[in-house]
Image 1 (cartoon, helix red, strand yellow):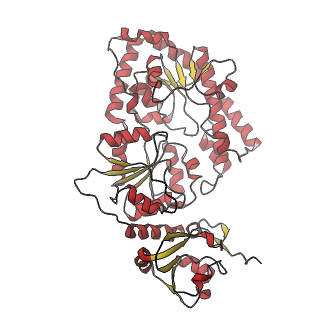
Image 2 (cartoon, rainbow, N blue to C red; image 1 turned 90 degrees about the horizontal axis):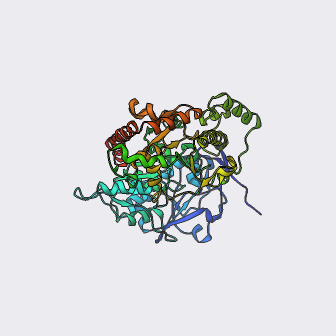
Image 3 (cartoon, rainbow, N blue to C red; image 1 turned 30 degrees about the vertical axis):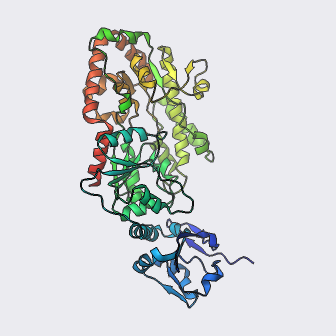
Amino acid sequence: MRPERFFVSDFAGRSMAMDGNWRAWIPLSEGENVLLLGLGPTGADIPSLLLNRPVFWLDSPSLLEATGRERTLPASWRKASPEEAIALFPAARCYFYRPGLRIDPFFWQPFLGRLFATADSWSSPSSKAAPQVLLFGNSSDLLHSELLTALMHEGSRVVSSLPVQSGTNIETLLCDACQGSVPSLCLSVNGRGLDADGRIFGLLEALRVPVVIWFVDNPFHVLSRIKLPFWKRATLFVTDASFIPLLVSEGARHVRHLPLAVAWHMWRDLPCENPRALQGHAESPPLFVGRSAFPDKNRYFAAVRLPKALEMEACSLDRKGEVPDIHWWYRKARTCFWPGHDVRMPGLGAEMCSQKNRTRWLSWGLKCGMRIVGDEGWRKLLPGAQIDAPVDYYGTLPDLYYRALATLNVTSWQLPASLSQRHFDVWASGGFLLSDATRGLSIFPEELVRPITVEHPSLLGNAIGFLKNHREEGLLLRKAWRAHLLEKHTYSHRLNDMRQACM
């Protein structure tokens, strides 16, 4: 006969059944005395070998009050204070009730952080040592190589990944990877490397290591994969400043705007300051490089269905020239932003409208002889158009940017006030950028922005024609943009901005 299920509210007020199976307790350490962190529900499947021996235990006060579990414990069990539990831990056989994190993360995450910060051999770095930075990921991950290059250029030691070892605590793995030296900073792009339970965050918080999460995609799409509220205590950066009020309304404590920057592998010197040296550009048509949809779009939105009435209203707006971007969809859907997956419905709507907008721009671009480099999805969206296969971002792309008469940027309506990597890379490679009128351009001087901004796709031909006939002005703009970006918009500048925000 199954034991009666006991229901409690999780941290967000949602009802959940407490798991009473012993598999819900995960081992944290080996030793003589038994330390139980979290008691579970009454009638939990505690192994018989623990029932009649001394056991030290600790649980969340709010959960004890909800369950009354303390009244049902064997007489041989003894309650420990958090300080006593931390002292017992190194020599104890310790088990942790993992569902407790979902029920009361505000108690368990800081406690587990203190537990491992004390138990493992952490030491403050020498004042003479180069700063150590956690940058989770590898060369195939978004922005990893760019940030790694900038960190190494400034002399930082970088720890990128944790070795995978079965049966070992992730906190201890982190200590080993850092060789016991407390990092000066943890930088996570889109939450990468931070475990779902928030245990790494809790440890770094206990060690007083600043944790930066840089959202370079729609923040709420990233957060829909994060189940617990530790992210609200991190220092958050967004590439699109229009998300700041929404994140603050959800409880984020520290949110700032931080655009993308120049990727150093894109930088090349202009071969000559003489405009005649750029005559070859006339032989290369204007260019667009980009995907028809973001990677894994279908899988991400697999369970989402758009309300037909809302979809029709958005399409009607689009025809009138109004912008059904992500914030329009958020207002219309009246979405619960976090926790959960509700934000994916307006996200799908914005993605649909953004794709239509980008297709409209490219249709006008094709009339001007534009070359499109992208995925197979464009063939369905632009029937009859020649679509060239994607190219290596770290290989041939800079040369394409340099040789094209101009490269077009069309801003995603998922990030309507953002800048894309093209706003930096095209100039760095010696090319010329034409951009739609994204609000993100406001970080640059007006005299640089005005000549490259195209207000409507129907005006694209005029902009391209002007470039063909005014090569000297184009070269001067290239020089001015490159000088400005080099002075203020490299990834080294962005790292400095992060550190200043964490002080």
